[in-house]
Length: 142
Image (cartoon, rainbow, N blue to C red; front, side, top):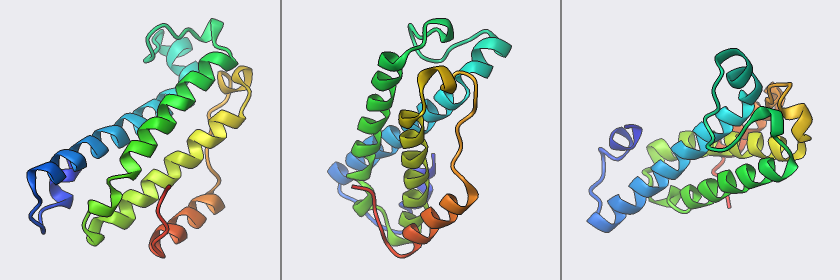
């Protein structure tokens, strides 16, 4: 949805629009998956559901976590390729969001699986400010 608002000011070739659409979908998927992982225990214990097929909190382990983190990294990498196509007016905001979710996924990767199912992972406010600063000066994800 946001993509249509972000690209209003510029005309794109059909191939560029398709690339942007795929990048936006990959970024949206990464956002959802990170949020699902952050709330894994609460979703399962309080709501009785898991958003990942074949993932059960009771059998959640490092191998499962690594598979999910790698999948998210793949989504983030695919979306990062499309960032240069975005107009400058929206690029910094999207970069900031991408960098934040990259940091969250990195923190998830570094957190033991048994701890991940008990605590919600977050990025500190200082780290968030650093991410915003990086986005404002034009740093982009690799």
